[in-house]
Image (cartoon, rainbow, N blue to C red):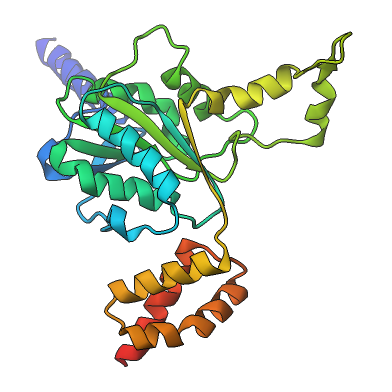
Length: 290
């Protein structure tokens, strides 16, 4: 009888161990000395982990041209944060390829020696933001939770989770965590013509947005600092091309000769952006080396 009971206990323990292995586990703290940037990932089992980004794409603030006003705002806010002063969550919006994500990477490069760290979170995993904040809350470093190309469709769960973290939750905000997000949408949710039907007009002609519109702008309003980026003019685009060609070691005479090709490249891509300028510079410099 005792042998049967012991076998039953052993099998029960094995079964419990197998069940526990597939249940979601609390997010554990990684080896923070392994990297300055981290990526939050969900395993197939549902466990969330912070993976170190061992090779962060190099980017310096001085390499970013024609966005001086935007650079000043982002750098100032980040410096305040790193120095322990008050700073804001930040939303960077505007034309694609104009330097939004590059500017955040450049700030990480500049302030990592002073304790700045970055955690990249996909919008699908934003529901786990409270767990991430809890893990880093007691650390001496300053953490930017970074969401790239952020936008939501109706009913996505990460939308409300992000709203709660930014503002409106009962818990106090964590002083060593800020959220930086980039987006092509100013209000992060799709806007439709039917939303205009919810506007109302008072007796004196004042226009009031309805609940649908209020809901769609409420998330972006929770970011304390908005930084807008705009398409580059032709001369601004060519200045960025010249800067990247010089950084890649191209001679000044070749840079001047590259201008017509750079314009054709932008025309074919349908965009005069910093990203397109960088891609052209890499192609042109590579052809010179051949």
